[in-house]
Image (tube, rainbow, N blue to C red; front, top):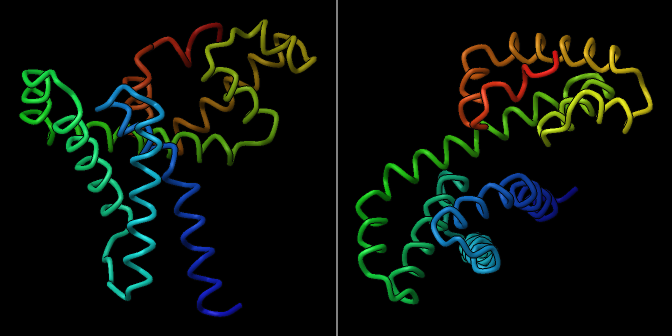
Length: 184
């Protein structure tokens, strides 16, 4: 595989990894899903064109997060009429940006950890994240409720060990302390 092919493969990997997170970041500012997608796509296009011109970007991930944040704020400034709202957003932008980035990266870690679980446990945890009950999961998967409870308990134990301090951050970020613990 040539250098150019590896570069394209790396860029595609970065796109698939970050696109959903960057869309969530932009949507946090804009509350407009389509405009958020446009801003994220533009950020990736800008990054690619910078690579084509030979400019070196130290951290592509940081560049993309910053670019999406700045483009979202520019969009608000240029296309929204509610100036008091825009001023409030601008004043809080650093705090919001850091919180959203931490949240998105933390959720990505959770999903990566869930993917590493055994297939059945992984599937159960994905259903749990969707808010489904043990009974619903059992029916969906064609297994007993007790099997769901056991696999869910074991998966939670594994996640808690693997994620250590971050485990409680996930519970906090997801907004429902009982999300993982209900129906155990």
